Length: 244
Ligand code: MLT
Image (cartoon, rainbow, N blue to C red; front, side):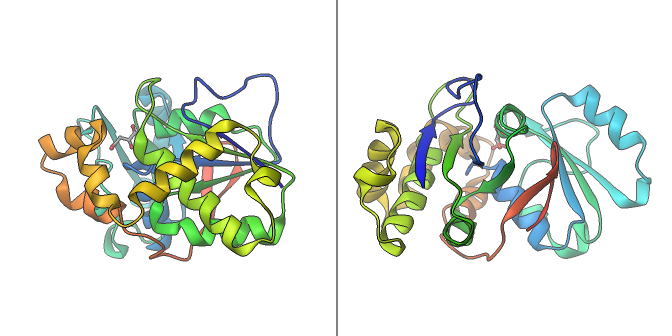
């Protein structure tokens, strides 16, 4: 098992693919995806483009679909939901398909959607993802952060570091053996610095500040919880994630 971390879709290589891509957007897309599927959503179909989302979701029975998403953190006008994981309760999403568009997370998914296996990770399902990787033992794994419009996001790196930390604790391998690039060492160090106070760093980072300005502190608090959900969202066809 060799791990590579890429901080943004833009930094992710375009001339190769891993055996398993793990897409991370802790604030908030991959937290929302895990929460929706855990609450009984039939699937989450991700789009970076709003027009394409509208065209595809128009073909779906209206009573079985929800249009969800944000731009700049704010709900897309006319959509059923924004991108708050807290809105994805069973009474809202059960047996429905969430057609989701977000500023960065859905672009990260699109970037690696041709990989053999694509799963998503957030802090809330970190251990479930680690268990999946330990069971399947993919040879080359990419942890792909979503960042913010091409720039680095500390919360995605912290989550990548949390995954590396747990893998090292459970598999009898050294950091030297599994680190495919220096980003892996950096992410682990970052996680060690903040592991007991993720909420604090999530509130201080640029997207945390953006969400605080939108009165979304409850979302930040929820997204900072660790290992509360035993679910691995897995891509069953390009862009469509289901409960693994
Ligand atoms: C994104 O994909 O950029 C995020 O999930 C934005 C958000 O917090 O809604």
